[in-house]
Amino acid sequence: MPRNTKALLERVREELKHDGGTNRLVPLIASGEASVEALKALAAEEDRIVRSDWRAFLTLAAQSTELPQREFFSTVASGEGLALAKLGDFAAACGLSPDDVADYRALPGCQAYPSYVARLALDGNPHDALLAILANFAEWGGYCATIAAALREHYGFDDAGCAFFDFFAEPAPELDELGLRALDAVLDTGWAVSGAMPQALLLHSYELMFWNTLADEKA
Image 1 (tube, one colour):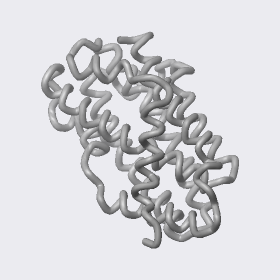
Image 2 (cartoon, helix red, strand yellow):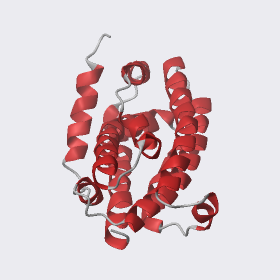
Image 3 (tube, one colour):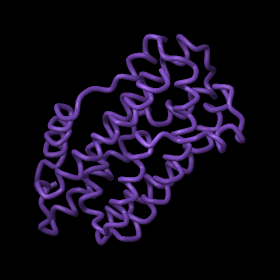
Image 4 (spheres, one colour):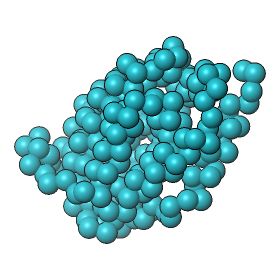
């Protein structure tokens, strides 16, 4: 690549890490202190998020002007489809039936995140959305790895019950490379990272709001 896009993305991720506070729920799950009710709420909230993000990523793929960008969003969208089935196994391990998940009343603080992803898609600026999503991927994967280990150690979940989090925790070098190629292609259009930082920071804040809403109301 003509520029060090990976280093640029890492700088953006470092800036996000120091903005917006800390995740209070994942440490509780990691230590086994989070309640089963918090896990149930996590499953039901994620069901709504995955379904919404799947549609948003398909919309972003359709709007993308650069081929690598379109391929990236299409690939991420297909991953949401694969994750949805695994999420059902997590919900079942928590003791939730499909009817329980459907009847669950979502918390506004949890659903702000997918609402903002949908807004990024509807705003018609897939370049800004690309940076926001790429910048937040790394932390999400780390959270999932921690949760998967804790579910086995403290809550007695089997592999099927942990598969949703395993899916996102596993290294995905091909997807990472595709994301970098997409970002590089977008940068070649003259688009500037600085103009998309407000969106990346907002998405990161909504991500933390998701976890901390669950910590405050369910843990």
